Length: 310
Image (cartoon, rainbow, N blue to C red; front, top):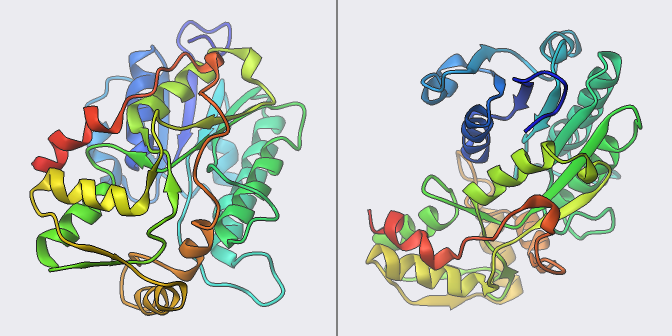
């Protein structure tokens, strides 16, 4: 990868300590980059410290002065920040959490990049992002994309993955874990369609996009080779983990009631009413992954059975 004349490009990865971000950081290091990973708590990045050219720094990326310092002298910025849940605000298209993480942060990133002449940025969005979408999540993701393209001085590329799977995922692993304890799975949105993409493929897409200026100004969909319903994915998680349970799809009214209860429980919700709204939009790509990204998507069946069995 060559994001600048520098033989060892310096890349800032925001959201680099998370599930997808950790794989992106590892791939960038392997590609010869010097990678800076800001995190609210340094302990969140402990697993990255063994990577030889990864620098973990404790920083608040939502503070403009801090963000400007982080962007200084970088060749590129990768933004992977995203949240799944938020509370609605009357009269607004989405809540304050989505606004802060999905829209205002991209605005700040682009402004900082333009101010310090950082010409390349990669932004992870979501398949189905649209300002007219039924969910707050997808509407905020669409506004975040617009923010990334707002300043022509910054060459941005947007990647829209479907649901991402991999050994540390919170998707298939959660369904496998639940089936180890519950006698039956009562499932809202059982017929929603997904096209899962392997986390390693997403990470390679980031690296390859950075190395190809032809991707500037474009949006790319990232999806695996096969479409599944949510019901099928839950069933597979049960089979592969050795804890298959009956899966009962709930009608919309009961699904919303279930989601409403779950989103008010302590901790990170397993499901929210906004998640159900997101699932009204098929999480399916419009076509194959673009050859610009040099990826052949990995089948779910080639990876998930092994890690779910563990």
